[in-house]
Length: 383
Image (cartoon, rainbow, N blue to C red):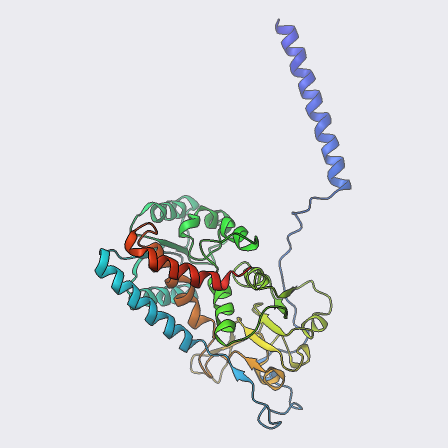
């Protein structure tokens, strides 16, 4: 009996090795379709320094009689904030509950700390209870997962944000996937991204920059349906979800990335151009066709000795050159209202859904509120 068992094990082992060899040959002949991930590293084709942001031979828009409409986000954000604050106040008085947002910050990055501060301030402004957990830069993955788990299970917290980027020793994708999809306010969970990509399905949340971009266009009466939209950049934070969301509005969407050959030729066909690449002044005037609508989601900190802070924010699109051609454009940081979508993302993406889910959809008193919320949500998920 033992001899026969040993013979059977040897046969299984031989069959396994033979199968593995055949699989390896197949891999050589048919490379895996999803293992070609490469980082998008943009190499500027021109000098993007502060001193050379604008081509001297181009006239200003006022000199040629053209005035591009400025797409400001602050008034829209203020309107949304006022509406949400009134709704939350009414619901608190009715059923005595408060929606909560939990934010986890790892490490001491100044930009991350600033973003968390803005989120907390925005929540308190409209009556949402903020919860924060701060972990050291060298925290373990297990410690971070425990923090996420505690927020997932806390009934007082209805939305969870893990502030990105995380230190390199932590698996960012694993952490994002660990957040409950129903509390994934950032909209980065694979379930929410997948639902955003599929017609007929709705994600629990839409990434804030993407939703704010579409909100900005809709509230400025910009027609999206049937337009050629070029999204420059494909990051999971901005470019990719923006492409998916705009596509649901029946635009013809083209994505330009770091491996696109002759990107200038592609962008010149855009009726609407959205940029999210993180390279200052990468997109110049000759990349744009006359009358284009430009939504610049980039905000890049560059050294500037003439500034009190020693640095300044510069966007992806060269504003001085783009304003000559554009019919509408988002403002330059520090000139009008800062990065336009930044005024929208916390009010629009974090606050709008939170006040609704904070009370449970099945409560009779909330039925009308839920219908109102769903109607607003469907505006961004048409199709």
